[in-house]
Length: 441
Ligand code: GLU
Image 1 (cartoon, rainbow, N blue to C red):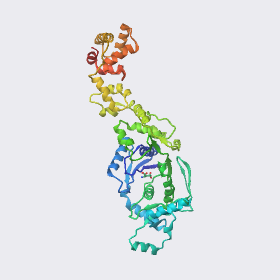
Image 2: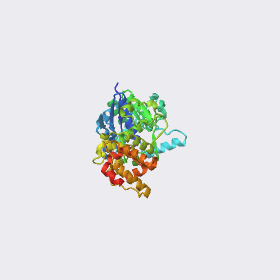
Image 3: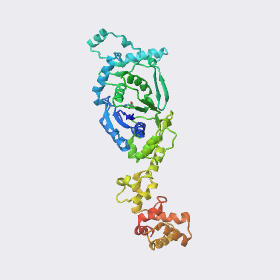
């Protein structure tokens, strides 16, 4: 059976790394077995959903290369939910309730006060048709609860958490639809997973108790229960990650020079004890993706680690991948010379300025000045075509007896205005003979 996974964000905010990790893992899970990855926009909450967030979600996924095969929006599927709803009403699995939020709160407090779990008491089940008619006559509209089957223990083997057991008697019948007819998350998600043929639901462990309820909804709708896996949540430096925590938003990371390959390499492995490897592409990451490798302890997302992985990724990026983001005229040779010194692609411009000049060399003392004048003469006589740096430093070593820092540093300072930087062997041909002589003289 083809594996079908889905990423189902609510467009009420921008995606943070935790959401991106969920999207990536669903994508990898599908890719690993040649399956399909879907995007489902959970926008039943019309008041809180925003089009700009939908667009940002698409843009983030596209930037990461996590392209869904199909996109669906819950707001366009209300007719489908209505049909399933009517089936469940007819089967006696949904029932009408009228308690206000205050009444429910009071019931909960009473139970808690008696040391009992705050489970909904199902008193609405006792209402007769005459009671419903009377409520309707005075304009009271019901909200709807799903009737859990108390005799069907809830069990599933979670792909990450292992065997899970829930006693439905210890759970409240969940509200699935509000009095104004709007939907809560729980039931539409199940209807969609059935209709879209989702085989694997992989999401955060904050959904474990939802799953317990949803397992019975699949069964009530006559559908097989998909495989479930719940990942330990990601924590950030600030503790719990929030969708509104812009500091860890994808758009901001992108602006800070984070490459999609880096985010993918890190997030693919975060939560496992497998090493993060910047050299692995998505094919390799998909092939090695295995839910069994994920632990149950919360994984910590660390900006510094992301920066390290990002640098390692950049040190391998081919020129073609970055060409349009480089300064005009910056060649492949220049990219390859400069790349090992970069933390972000944008920094390439700074090193390119060192190549094109002008550079600000420090004031040299008299002895160093004499050395550089000598270097000028040697450089002027050099055939520049082949390894001028090797030839220059080789000749200077011989004629001056200098070595190490005394040999190299003044040259680097005069030629680049810097104490450190990319390999001079690669830099000097880029600077060119005329410009190099100007800087030495
Ligand atoms: N919209 C839900 C959320 O953002 C989806 C959960 C699910 O994957 O079913 O958490």
